[in-house]
Every structure is written in structure tokens, then in C-alpha cells.
Image: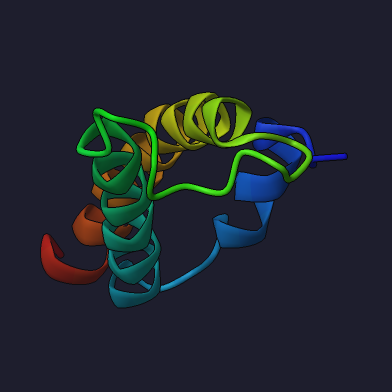
Length: 79
């Protein structure tokens, strides 16, 4: 079972800009991997949750982490 996206991103509430940036880049990499596997042969479809569910979860988390990235940037670099 996957953790609720809102709960998961909560761990980044006070994270540094660099830590959130690294996580965002990992999410984007995972999203691109799914989107670029057009023949659906490279991903393991015998896992639960499947790649399609992981893809949707990653998109939700990306939407939640983006504002946190902006806030961290402002906190650290726009003083």
C-alpha cells in the first residue's frame, strides 16, 4: 500500500531547498521513465501497486512538492 501523497510530502516541510530539489528531480525521472516506455515492456507490471498507479502517485506528489520547493527557495535565497 502506498502512503497518502499529502502525508508523504509532509516530511519535506522543513527540508532544505537542495533536499527538496533532489527529490523533485527523482520524481521527474520516474515520471519520464514511465512516459517514455511507450511499449510498456521495460517496466515490471507484476508488482503491486503497478507502474500506472506509481505514475499517478508520483504526479500527485510532484504537484504537492512544487510549492514546497518554491517556499524553500524563498526561505533560503530571497532574504
